[in-house]
Image (cartoon, rainbow, N blue to C red):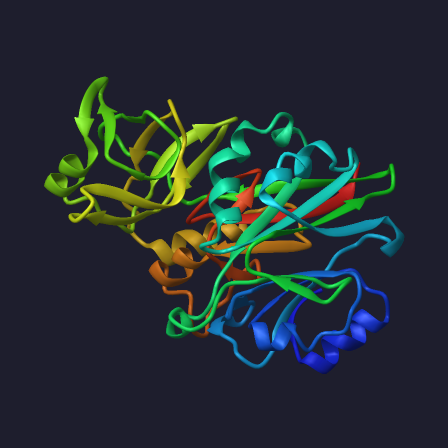
Length: 327
């Protein structure tokens, strides 16, 4: 099940003991009954009938796991490594962090250095709010077991699967590195002043402003055989820095992504090629906006449009999917 439902319908599922992942606006999530569900705030939803900013229903994904095998908790920033070290060996972990929080920042900066994090299925996203509400509302995450919401802590669901089943996380990325300059950063950061360009020290603000970098095309690096994107947020004259929506990693080679002739078509085609049937999918808000996914069009993989995707590490302009299947 991956679909928009009313609050009454969502509560009926919760009362039946279903294990759920829920995305929607805060005032709607606060109306949900207590149960085995995990959630976060975003009004932007992709359905098989198209994308929309939904303000009266919530998007529900039912997870194929026995409720006895599910553990839900909040995690403070000091316990972020435990997300990996205490994860079930045969199962999956869902992580949702409140956008623009310290937890968001610390997870983004440190996740790729947590021992063993790439050896287990971890998927998640960064919560947010409608663009019209950014001055008055705060991104939040929800622990359905207790009914608590938080704008400071990460909420984590850890689920153990039967031995004959296994989980996998997939990254759908339509971008590939272009043939431009090699960019290497000295430190992991959401904002950069210095770097090296083709092996030589450089002022990245000067480089970006003089080249007029296209903010819609992310920087791309390769990690573990997969392309990882970080989206450009701003070339900021006041701080003389380049700001990102996800942190660049230290010492890795980045290039700006090659141009896409048709962003929307590339997204839909790539999502349609995924062989497994996901139980949970999260698409980037930038894909939603830059790819013009709002409106009536066929979306192969429905799910929330989010403000950063977690497939072990934090990235942007990707689609991440969780699948559960026989071994």
